[in-house]
Image (tube, rainbow, N blue to C red; front, side):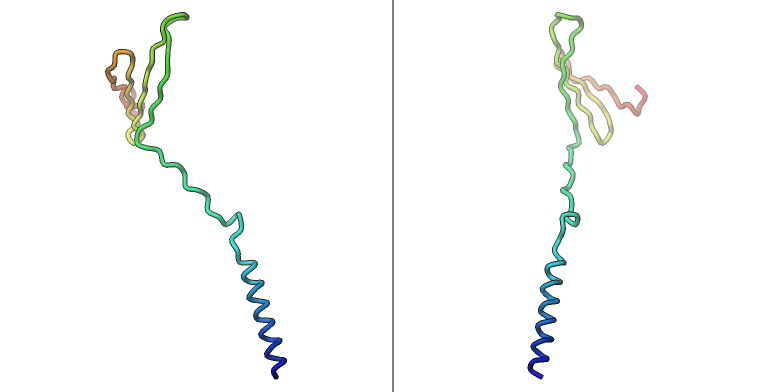
Length: 89
């Protein structure tokens, strides 16, 4: 009787250990990292020249990603509203 209980306890312990080993999280079960959240505005700075050898002019373009409205700031220092591409301008 005592030997039977020892065998049963050993089998149960072995099943528990095997179950714990096989229930670990695998690489395919790990959640991917969350995507980077962009802010509401995207800004791009670029230069342009009117002709070869001419002075380069710095332009800054800002886009509101929620409304797709665009603004541009050139050498004049003031922001110009370019509207939205969805407006058909």
